[in-house]
Length: 249
Image 1 (tube, rainbow, N blue to C red):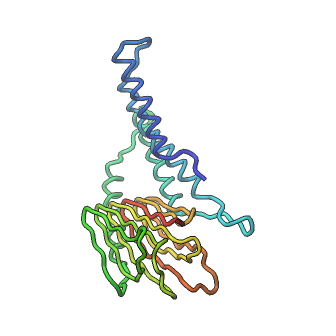
Image 2: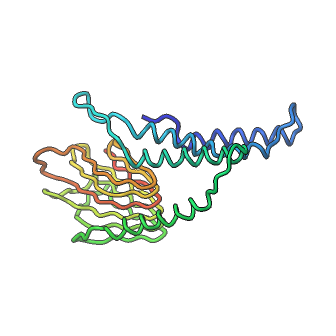
């Protein structure tokens, strides 16, 4: 369930800004103070933050056994964005004065610490390693191939794995994935059991419709997992400023 995405919020703001510039430059109708419109840019994080807060409480599960899932990562992120929006709107309208320099001086070092901890906690995986700098890693497609446990690392790039044509071995297969400023797309067969465990810093993760994200979030997700599975794909991930999308093919 989505309400107003960040893309829509930014798009509406830019549209209003563009129309104001156009009317001002053409001298049409009313006198518009284009500069004052910039004072309302904090509406963008405010709307996105409210959206994150709403999404932090959502139902999961099928028709039976539905429950409300709480995402602390989305909730904290939503609170932070709402606070930033309210504070900057108040400052721009001269309603109150808050010194944000100290906040940002603390915020970014804390984010870097979380990034470092996330990368250091990477799992040791026996198998082939795949690395890409400022590029991408792609496996799968129309030709059959054999999936094996291994590690994947991409910096300023992406990882794209298509498992729908892969020969998946019996038992558990482990993929350890680390991405900095990039994304991970994994396409899985419809009957494959998948367990995802990982952390995301300033990004999001989606597994067959289950979603989580925020400034920092860690979560375990399961899909098609039963008491006994012939084949199980276990994905451990660390994504910095990006996203993980695991979906059925």
